Every structure is written in structure tokens, then in C-alpha cells.
Image (tube, rainbow, N blue to C red):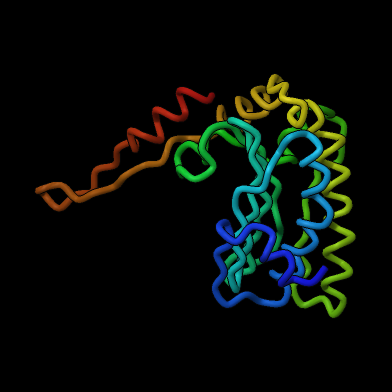
Length: 199
């Protein structure tokens, strides 16, 4: 299957701007390896955005979603890709930011003795397509191993991972200058509400 065949599968969810060959290879591997695995659990692809420096692919089952994303912007070095599991909106920033966890955070709850998992985005590797495919195959195994309850619709481990991740976070802060020229800092109310809700 060529990359143009992948684009034809669901035209309405594809948003492309000038895409790098690495981002296209990444997206193709995600769709060939991860997509069939999680589709067996009822997840359907709802978004595929491939840009020059990033890719986001989102799968949804009712209120749950799995998002695979990366960034290779020069300022984001070192480059990794992430698998995020969430509940609710995958588009609203505050909802997504507080009501989701990385697969690594879930793995830490499922098996606290497991090695920390991370996924390198091997930009500059002369065998990028082969290297990223092998990495995505490993990530796919990790989804099945650590995300099994989430895939089956049991969110109890997800809630534990979300609570642990959010307890240690502070809400975002807003700084603005008052009438005397001094900066005043307050908590962003929406972020504070999300922290309270999801911690």
C-alpha cells in the first residue's frame, strides 16, 4: 500500500501541509501497525494530520481516545513520539491536557517495576523508515501490554495514572501588569478547575 492509498482511506480527516518524508513514513507505520491492533478493540481513526514537522493520529471509541503524535521542530530536540490515552475531548486543550496520560504513565501504574518507556523519533537516521517501523512495533506491543484494560474500556488504571500525574502539577499561571506597573500573577481559572476535577 502506497502513501496515496492511505490518504484515500478517509479523505475528510486528512489535513496535510508540506510533509517531510520522515513524517510520512511515521504516519504510514502507525497506520499499518497500531491502527489494526486498536481497531480490534472498537477504536476508529478520527484524525490524521501530517505536517512538515509533526504528525498527529487520533483514534476514538465513544468517550475514550488514543493519540499518537510527534514533533520534530528544531526547538523540540531531542525528538520523541508519544502515545497518549485519554477520555473526553481530544481537541479542547484544557480537557486534553488534564484528562489524558502518556502510555509511559499508565505503564508505571500497571507495573511499577517496569523500565521507563519512551519512543525515540530517529530524525537523521539513514534507515529512518526501517528504524521507526521497528520502534512502532515495540510501541504496539506496549499498548497491548500496558493499555489492555484501557483498550477493553476499564478506566480504573487510567484514572489512577491520571490522578498521579495531575497531583504533582500546578495549574497554569497568568501574569499581567497592574496599574502601578508591577506584575501580578494569578492562577488560570480554567486550568485550576481542571486540576481540581482530575487530580
